[in-house]
Image 1 (cartoon, each protein chain N blue to C red):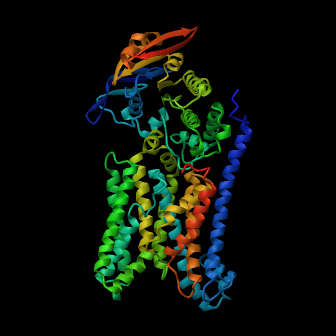
Image 2 (cartoon, chains in turn yellow, orange):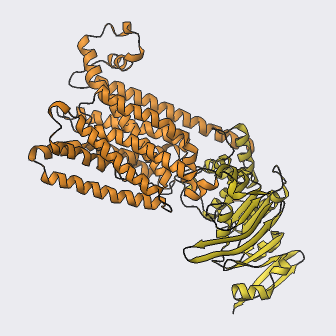
Length: 258
Length: 363
């Protein structure tokens, strides 16, 4: 699926990503964790070629991401940004329909409309569908953007802090939707999901693998039990923490800044 | 479970979306009919009043068999075809063109304050025209066409500057807007400099030009401005989805949805700029329409560019046509330039719509 090796990204003189290697398999959720400024969002943007990276090999199912046309890339990779500002009065239904943009011919087909309706129902956005996107709360907007990404039906889903503005109910809803995309409950095939996320508990619970970044470098990756050790959390975040699990459900309790 | 969401069945939602599309179609159709009605009334009114039937037939003359026009006196045909119709059609072209350029620029920069005026094109046209007037070559053999050509050339060179600027690496939409504001001041200063050295007579001609007026519109002018509009409008419509993507999240999101950001931005900007240049070169500065017609349209039917583009064009055309009608009739036989009247007509309407929908917009 997604295979990255030797990814560097430089902004001015600052090296933001430093020799990152990363794999995401089909049907797999990989969560990127790490403190602010660790390069999580930048990594997602490099994969989506919103930022142009240097000296890297990035392939999706064996095809170099650099060789794909913009449109082919958009068919293969869906991206949910952390925030978007105003939408100049676009309605929610139009916003979600935009996910079909890379697939459409010149107007939307019945099939496009059906796929958009599926996503609206999946995320319970029916009541918002005809409202203006600009009227929505931050959390509602996040769910709309996730719906747009589902509609895009890529083989790879990139989510940048998809739960940052969500309440508990919708956090679980969003992460479960990501799980469904990976497992192909509704979509055409199993997809890879790469999520940048601050909530370590949610990350540990839903991810197959965690990748911990610090100052643009991969510090640890693997199962949450290997990555979320008190020692790693101490070195990466500067916080002492207790890590445990209640049955299958992991939790992280930050104790104090050290 | 989740009490914030009223459960809505798929069928109900589908129905609501379909009703939405039908409402958009009806709104557009109603707008076009209203525009035809306004053109008819405008053709009938003036110092010489004509019947509405005569006006409508004169309006449709190119597509009607000549037998249908046989009972209209020749002077009425002449009045309609030589004086009123070119002016009316030019009003429609100018309003539609400036509104389309405004929608396109606002969408591509994702900025509701942008209009063809704010990226410097209209002031540049004014500078070109005033330079031609200053050179004194606009009378005698060249007629008014030198001013038009100079205005057009100057507007296009300003547009080239804007485009070159926007094509630079790492130039964001906000920088494009700010660059345009800079150019606006530059060309305003250049025009002011020309005015400073102009004679009394030239000064009055320059000021007259900058008012923005449809006086003396001819079929030749209609053909040129209309031709540019007919070429440009379908191109913008073709990019309606892309404009939605830009409006939805700017360059990054448009790229992640598969649009060739650089190419779309270049095409849309070139088209918007050419339409504006073609219009303002003939009419002078009609500043307000390009900013406000898109907003009025957006408040009425929402932000989906597939509908917003044609609907804005209709709103803009109505705004300019009705303003020109008011300017012609209120103090007849004195004609108040449309560039002045359009603000009097448009601002109250705009403020009313803005205030009555303040809870719905993200502005």
